[in-house]
Image (tube, rainbow, N blue to C red):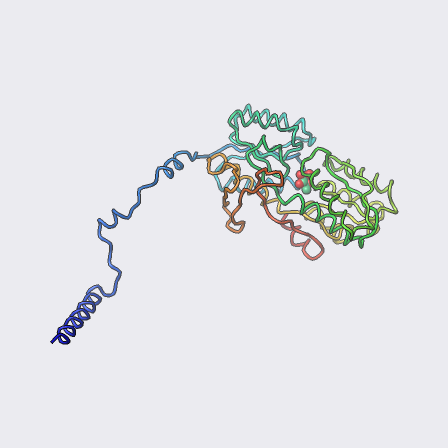
Length: 370
Ligand code: RAM
């Protein structure tokens, strides 16, 4: 009897399950109105507060280069204008004609008077530009650095194109390959006070301490102030002073690298003195093809300007403050996510990415791009 009862119960259950399935046509049932109401979550207080504090553009953004007239900074500006277009902001591309600290200060003063929303500066001097950048911050203008940083207390963030160490060490590595790890070399830098140049030159000196460079020596460091003619003359001066022992010139500046190549070529010393450093590929096509330079190092200047401009915009909206651990993305998903990290002194910054190396195998491709 018990067995029969059990079987009846089982049959009833099976029948009702089958009926339920066939009635619903195996479809996921629509949730009732109450269930929907129950599920729509009320925004949290913090989310509401955050949304209320996000400022709306369009913003006026100043993109301030070390100087005007260089392909390097113009291509950074190309990326910056692309981002500003996407964001619907107004972008002012500015820089001193003479690449001086003094005139960068004058420009920042005038931007404070114009009450722009944000200044992104490639600084000609780390400490010398700090007071005027602090003045801008005090006036409620956002300040960030790209390419070359102002002192940490005078900025909210810094986009470094590549790690100072990697670029500095990278240039010695490329030079060593070009001169077979033997010979005197010289450095032709921009200005002695340029923050990025100082860091890179220091790392060049660190790298050359390695045993594998024991037959290489840095004999001089000279400065062409990122001016084409002065850089060319300084390169000629190095050749005059140190050739034939001089086997290489490292120019970690976009202006001096092609200028040094021109000097070597004009002196008929292609292959005798190798040149490397950092500049845009379009300036180096001929020099790589004719053997004045075997390889050199840089980053995407277009991405540098593009990502800087997104940072400027987010500083204005309030979505980004530059605090360690903050992340953001841009309008280009291929660039991925960026995060605020710290340097060896604990100062927050954002890293664009690893350096690119250009040589005979890829120069034609890149020269078309920037
Ligand atoms: C120069 C500037 C700039 C640097 C490039 C490589 O034009 O010094 O700051 O990043 O070269």
